[in-house]
Amino acid sequence: MQTRSRIIRFTLALAVGSLLSTMGLLAQGRGDVRATFSLVKGDLTVNEPVFVNLTVANDLDEPVVIDLGPSSYGNFRAMLVRPDGRAEIGGKPTGFRPPGRVLLGPRSPYSALLLLNRWFDFDQPGLYALDFELEAPLRTEHGSALPYAVQGHVAINIGPRDVVRLQRVCGDLADLAAHASSRVEALESADVLSYIVDPVAVPFLA
Image (cartoon, rainbow, N blue to C red):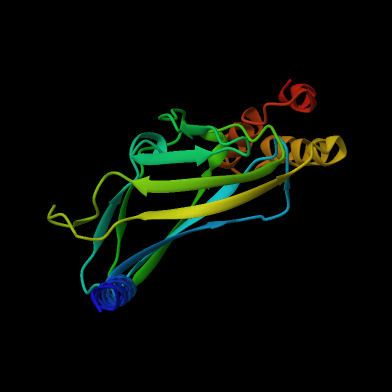
């Protein structure tokens, strides 16, 4: 009888825990500011540029300040688990990019492309697991912190190194840098090319 009572209590505890967890997820879903991270391209190979798209939806009736930090990357915390199980913490990239302070209007979306190669090398095939978090809190236009987190998890599957494909990617970036319609666009393309850590990229960088 006591054993049966313990089983019932344990089952109820699991049910209550599951309900609370579900309620928490629903509360997050109803949040007034929602952030998602998604892989831009799923078909990737070793040493290719890997981009994640950050989307923030502001459903508030007031503006929200998003501070991405120095070079528009400095306030992110990124952790990557590699195919061999090793965990790496992303550093604080620097570069020509301007500080990433964004004033997001009421009922408006915001999106930004993040180049993961600024933090990590994707130099072996297999499955990578990435956890992202913006350490700087979202704030109102007047500076008050908001209780909404910008964080997410992305799974990245990297295929074997493909020399022909890498040459094509490097060539496209070099062409964009050489024939860009603006200096900013040229610098962006050259910057992405500089993070392709592969012998194939050397002639294009030159």
